[in-house]
Image 1 (cartoon, rainbow, N blue to C red):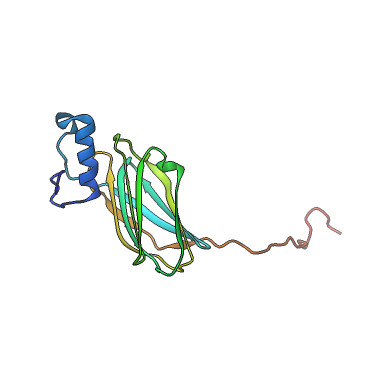
Image 2: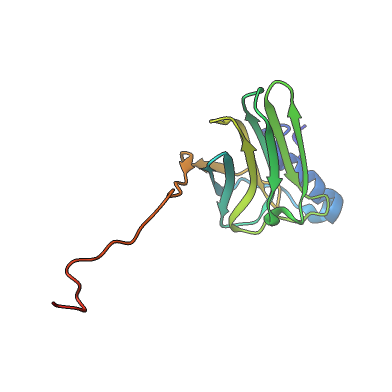
Length: 171
């Protein structure tokens, strides 16, 4: 249902707002209002690891992800320290779908700024992000701004060569 009455039913924002009503009481939760906030969301690929980052100007109250992967590949999920105070649920489905829900039953939030949320390790070359939702800690659904997946290239070797001419030895 549309708990926060923003016109979009069954979002992460509805869950965060409902928890806020339970924790703070109906009169303290306040009326939801339209916000123009956004969250920057990016994925960084490093070998067989996909790191999921956010960057916001305000605290995040929750997040929901639906990720498709090759069902014939092994997959593992590791949550970061930024989510230590948050409740986390995830489910790996046989069809190659990973569902992740991040929230707090105590009304806590993910601190603003840049945060690594979690890492997905898989043999799959690609992940297909089907759904991403973020809510601020008041229960407002946030706009999501994304960048392309960036790959971290780690050099396999390096060497130091003689620099000619040597400015410290003019001979």
